[in-house]
Structure formats: structure tokens, C-alpha cells
Length: 156
Image (cartoon, rainbow, N blue to C red; front, side):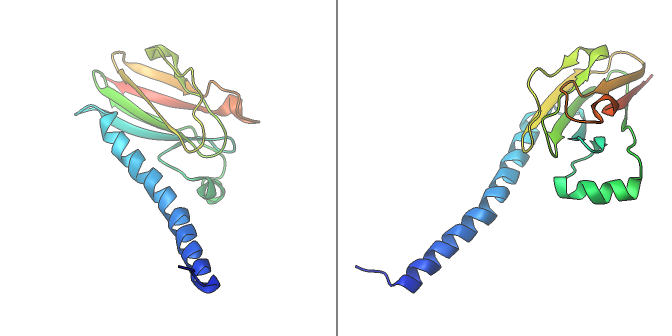
């Protein structure tokens, strides 16, 4: 059975559209499936997105949103995460552009594998000390690498 040229082009177009639309949706669904399995009930959950242009951003920020985000914010601000002593903290780490790292030395959190764009890394720890602590990128990621820091505040 022979398929005419127009029909085969149409079938190929439908297949291509299905892949282009389906792949990102599939990745998003898989990420949403993994997220609940990486957390513990009652944990304080946060998302940090690394950007070589803006530093750490609180929340999930896509690469195309970075330019408009910079225009709204002006200079990059360090994100502040506030928790209470005794909280179990889970941080979902993402990258919008290049490979980033993460370390929170006060709680012994240090990623050895970089966070690559499109991938997600999870860190968890118990906030068992009161105070203000700095977290930072531990993989050289560009010109503002030294400014890729944020603050964790643990209240009593």
C-alpha cells in the first residue's frame, strides 16, 4: 500500500508537532512526579533557580524570564529563606542557563555534581542551629559567580 506524498508529509508534520509539544510536557510531568517523592511530609520546601546573570532567584524561573525579571528588579538581590529551628528543609535547585553548584557549609550541605540546565537537584537538612547563614554557588558559572549567594535565616 502506497501513501501519497501529501499524506506522508501531513503524517510527518503531525508526528513532529507531537514530539515538539509532548517532550516538554513529558519532562514537566516527570519533574512533578519526582518532586513529591523527594520530600518528606511536613518539610519546608523552597525552589532556587541559578542564573549566571542574576544570581540565585527564589522560585522557579525560566531562561526566557530572566531578562524581564532583571528589568523589574534592577540589580540582583540575594534571596532570603526563613525557617524555624527544628524544621526539615528541602530545597529544589534548578539552573536557567549554565551549570551551577550549591553549598550551605553551616549545615554540611555541599553538592558535588553540578546542577545542569533542565535538571533538578534536591538538598535537605534539619535546621538545628539558630542564626543567619550564607549559601552559595560552588561551581564557577560566569562573571557574577562571586555574587551568587543567598541567606538562610533560622529563627528560634
